[in-house]
Image 1: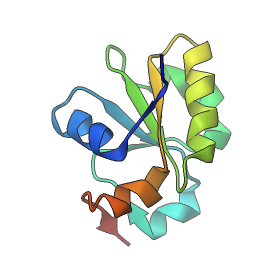
Image 2 (image 1 turned 60 degrees about the vertical axis):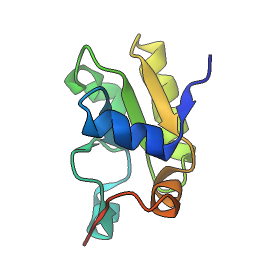
Image 3 (image 1 turned 120 degrees about the vertical axis):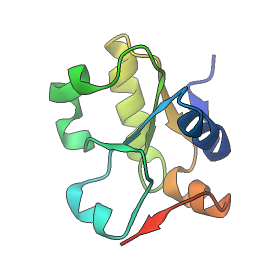
Image 4 (image 1 turned 90 degrees about the horizontal axis):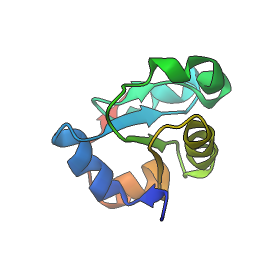
Length: 103
């Protein structure tokens, strides 16, 4: 079973309320671009705050390129969470021309 998903799949899941989206970038990175509806939980604080993630929904993690999100998804899966990495992160989200909030 793959623990990744495409950006367009994540967008549809978020839009339809079937998926929680978690931004694992650091605070300073949020100044550039955000995805509305995403929960912000930096990778550096994730292990101590896994219990704050929504229960009962799969969780998709993203960062700029997908590398940190892959780590986050692995940490969450080891804790028993149905977790995925958005392949390509924000770069893929932009490439798919999905909604973003700048600044």
